[in-house]
Image (cartoon, rainbow, N blue to C red; front, side):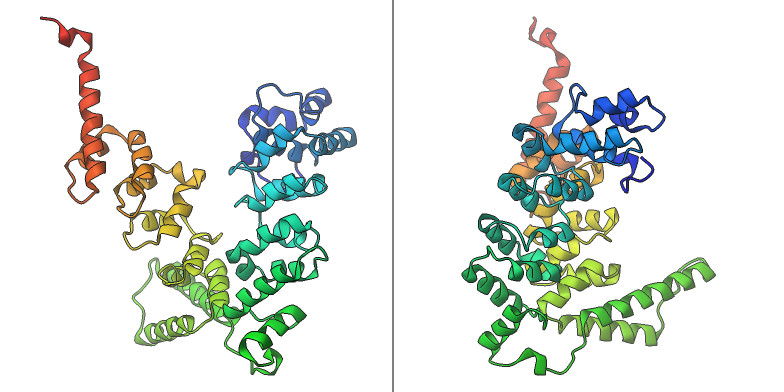
Length: 381
């Protein structure tokens, strides 16, 4: 679909013919009606999303109608799928806004965008307000989520007070939100509007981006990045000191939108929300994620985020790193062990730097494989 914002790669290859504008309308209509055999719920939801952009009005309207009428067993599995893209989840939120359990699944899905949560925050029923409140990282990362919660007529006053108190204690100041201003007075005894303007995350992010652009220009001109000058190094040290003085809320915004240098600094932050925000940054690369999986200083929260992401686990080097990392829970490391190549398992069986249980299981795996290769004939005399 030319108008669809998602790449065709988001759709299972077997379903491509159902969204190809060159395919007969009857083939596309089959997809729009959900009459595709043996299709996983998440793939079906993505297919319907694609077909909602079909140039044939009959096909697009049918896809929307089918999505709104999906059986609970189908949408329940689809909305809990880690592989579902954020635009699809956002689209389904509109189709199923009257189903509380569907909205709950969308709010709990890590793939749901902050923008979607912010859009839902002003209108979700009371039963779902607490789910939004409990996702502390989202509250500090995206200001409009807090704004939306505070406008929600269904939200209990105690929940709003708790959310605002948490945000204020972590440095979030939104002068256009009366509840946050009141929370600031309650906690700090001062009016936040009377405070002088501070060095904000936005200003520091602009400096990081300017530094990144400068590095890119020099690399393009000289073919490689020259070592930093004394002036550049002093500037970076000063920027790092300023980052350390930022509030938690500002650090989270910088971790989310800043460049690699900012992420590297904030991944080591003692606050788990800050380090997790850096790991979840949409700008982070596979190489950085691999570095985190290899690092013995990565926090447990960051490692959990990595090994629970199916898309990251497709990287073979990442699974190897997780098995070797002593901070990864043993049940998780042992689950990945059989997915490694034999040469790497042999290395693990001899490596005294990995957890003893991992080393023992690697030896047991090799012994079992050796016995299996000999076959039944090995028991004959």
